[in-house]
Image (tube, rainbow, N blue to C red; front, side, top):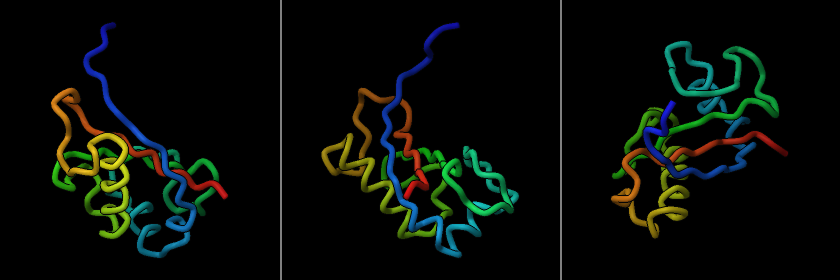
Length: 104
């Protein structure tokens, strides 16, 4: 084994998103390939975390989620790691991982 890359990340708690019909439709889409512990079709719970990958320019693997939620994820990631600018720094060759939690 070898370390192939290093990445940055943040964790956000957004239980209110798990109450939205549009987010749940995205989360339960059987064609969605986003990393999650959520089981499609079940009610969201404390272990329904979702992991999305943020790139520069508000792009990423889950940009098909509801637009305001995607933008909030991107903006939080950029604020934490890119001085608020939507451009990944050269020291990261990967993405910024955003873990979305459903905790009260």
